[in-house]
Length: 397
Image 1 (cartoon, rainbow, N blue to C red):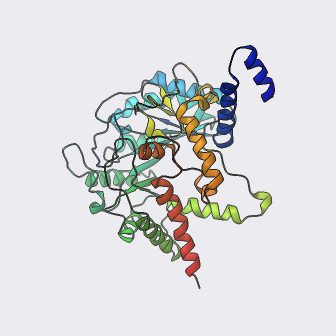
Image 2 (cartoon, rainbow, N blue to C red):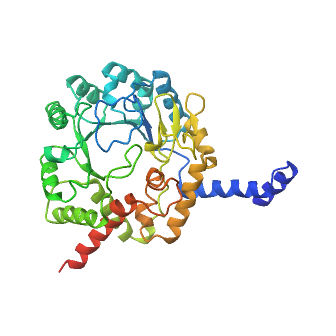
Image 3 (spheres, helix red, strand yellow):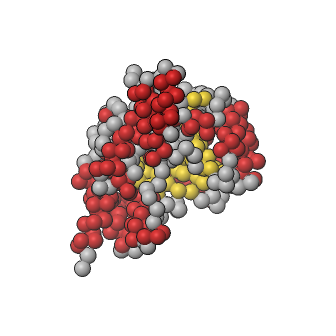
């Protein structure tokens, strides 16, 4: 087949090297990245009322809002993809709740025929401070999974504040109490900074009593507009994960996202060989901005411009379906660089089966391109987590 392509290319005046490169980029993409999406991230608005110290959003000061026609185009893309798989529709930043209940409801309506057939489910990630009874009614009516961003007890939330510098903690807790009073279940995501990572037990104590179904810990990274804060040391990351693993082994009821990912991977690896599968394909995570512009691989790339890569946009959902974009996504420079990096990871990194190459955005924001073999995320959230578990196993009697 490759030889036939080469012959056709020569007849049409296309160089042999160009055809070889195209074939290679496509093959690499299909080796590592799925052409189907199980998650799509939508930006209902760019505006965010908060001014968190580590925020990566480049347009959080502007109110640019998604129209229902754009949401309808995304719904049409899910229809175009077909198949029985459920697609998770994630509403994410700015602060989605600044769109207002009625505008948000209008964005949901195009997806409702799909939801009625069990083809989509909704998730929203919110800073929590704008949650009210009407929002809880909407979450319940449309079957939302709600994620609340909160970093722990009040002292751990010093980086979360509004534009006037006023702490956000009390408002976040009021929103959480509203969720609990309305019977709306939620998960939590906490950013762990260099100032809080040395106090894992105090943070875990807080989340054990918060009422969340689970918590995910995002160790602070270089992302988007957040590139100037001091990095977290790998040794501190290992100590943090070790403390959480030890608590779990001692009977803590706290469900930590990262621990369950690791323990699930270990269980799968220890199962019968007939039940094991190769490494999963990387989820493309198409992320649709307020105006329909779409990036893949990392939601943090939305709205970012680069001298080398432009705006990372591979298409606009108002003019082209997501499946059509994914069919040619390997041609984008940043996507091809990322799959080249994944090739190196798969061939040389002992953590690859668990890590799967980590996040594309981290590579760019830390190194300025997508070819770097390792990032802080790789080290602190994947490798040090594995090493912490290894230490506890070695020390067991």
